Length: 231
Image 1 (cartoon, rainbow, N blue to C red):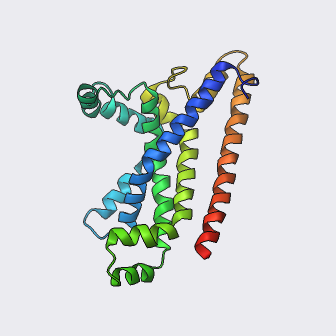
Image 2 (cartoon, rainbow, N blue to C red):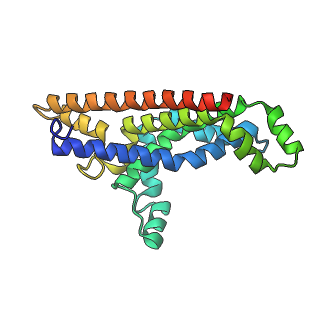
C-alpha cells in the first residue's frame, strides 16, 4: 500500500486509523455506562440525558465542531483549564480530531449497547441478585457477557463514524496535513485541486476497504461470541 499511495496519502490513512481507534476506545467505557443507565436506571432527568446523548446525531456536524471549539479551544473554559494545568491542547491537534469523532460516534455506540442490554432477560439478573451478587457484579458476570455482541456492534459503528467524520473535525481542528488531515479531509482537499482526482479515488478505495474489513471482522467476532454464549 505504501507504494500505491503517496507519503501524504499514507499519512492521512494512518492518522485516520489512529483517530478512529482512539475515539472508539475512549468512548467505550462511558458509552457502556450511559447505555446501562438508560436501559436499567430509574432517575430524574433520564429523558434529558437520552436527548443530550443523541443530540450530535440531530445537529449539523459543523455546529458540534463549533461548540467543541468554543468549549475546548485555547480560549474556551475547558480548553484553557486543560492547557494551563495539564499542558493538554486539543484544538488543531489530532487529539482534538479524536475528541470530535468520539462525540459524533458516541450516540451510535450508546444506542447499540442500550438495545443489547434491554434484550437481556431481567430474570437472569434478578436471580444473580437474589443469590447475593451486587449490581456491579451482576453487570460484569451476567449482563455484559450476554450483551457483548451489541457492545461489539456499537464499537464498530463508532469506529466507522469516526473514520467518516468530516464536518465536526474540520471545524474544530481544521485540515492540517500530517496533524489533523484525516481521510475525509484529504479526499476533500484532492477534489479542490486540479489533477487531484487520482488521489481522491485512491483514498476513497482505501476508505471502502477499511470499512468492509471492519464490518467483516465485527460479523466474525459476533458469531464467535454468540457461539461461546450459546455453549
